[in-house]
Image (cartoon, rainbow, N blue to C red):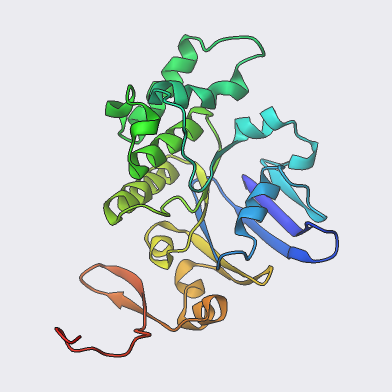
Length: 267
C-alpha cells in the first residue's frame, strides 16, 4: 500500500467534525476516485493527507510512514499535488514552472541542475505537452495550464499523485485529455487519488471509488458498486439514471430532467 488512512477525523474548531472515521487504502498503479457534494470535506481530507492540516484522530501513512512524523520536503518527495483551480498570475515559462516541482530534491540556496531539467523534460513528454515548454503559463488555456500543473507534480517523482477536482472548469475535450493522462500515469505504476464531481470520470478510470457525505464514507468499493442511483441520491439529493451503454462500452450516469419534458422547438 502506498497510502493507508485509518479512522481519520478532523475538526476546524475542535467541536464539529468536518469528517470522521475515514479509512481506505490505495495501491501503486490504482486510481481511487472520491466523490461528494461541495463542502462535505473532500479538500480538507486531502490537506490532512498532505499534512497541511493535522488530524484530530486517526492516522495517514504514506509508503509505511506516518505523515505526522515526516518533514514537508519528505512528503513532497512521495506525493505530487494538483490543487483545484490554480492559475499563476506571473508569466513563468512552462519549463520554469515545472522545474519548481524539483524543489524537494534541491538543497537550500542551490539551483536546478542538469538532472532537474531532464526530469522536467521527461514530465512534459510523459503527458504529451512538450510543445508548451516555452509558453508563459499566464497565457495558457485552462486545459493547458492543468496539464502543466500535472507535469510539475510529476517532476517531483512521486509515488502518489493527488488531484483535487482536476477537470473542473474544463471543456469536454480537455476533460478527456486529463482523464487519459490519469489513466496513463496509473498504468505506469503511480497511485492516484482524485476528487471529482463527475461520476462518469470515475467510471472511466477508477479501480475503486468512495462517496463522502456528511463527514462519512457512505459507500466504498468498485466504481460500479459505489456509483448507484441510490447512493448519488443520498449524496447529492438528485435523481439519476445509471446504465451500461453498449455503444460507449461503459457505465454512464445521467441526471433525470428536473424541468419536465419539453418537445423540441417548444418555448
